Length: 136
Image (cartoon, rainbow, N blue to C red; front, side, top):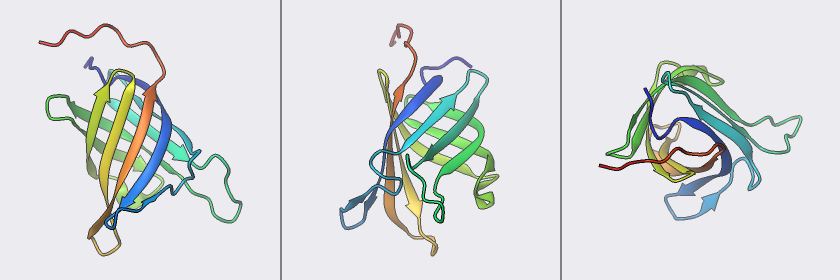
């Protein structure tokens, strides 16, 4: 299952854009983390604030299998396990743009009422050399 998305990516930023246009950084502007996509079709995601507060732990961690559609710029994360058990078994459809070493994921974030009021934008940089790519 070799694809251009395979590899290890380091988190550069995680932001939330609200309906009113304001941008927030729920894990701080210096958040840390990685996302990994394997050739066998598995992925894992971890990101968190660089500095945790002992009484207010934050972070995201989940894993499973994935499908990537390069032509339509989206990826589906089939969640097998997560820090948030309500996400287990979900298929997260995420806009995924890969350009060189850059990976940008954009996904709506539903509120408790089920209404989408914000979108998460997550920027990563690939941590290994990409092989030459031939586009047909």
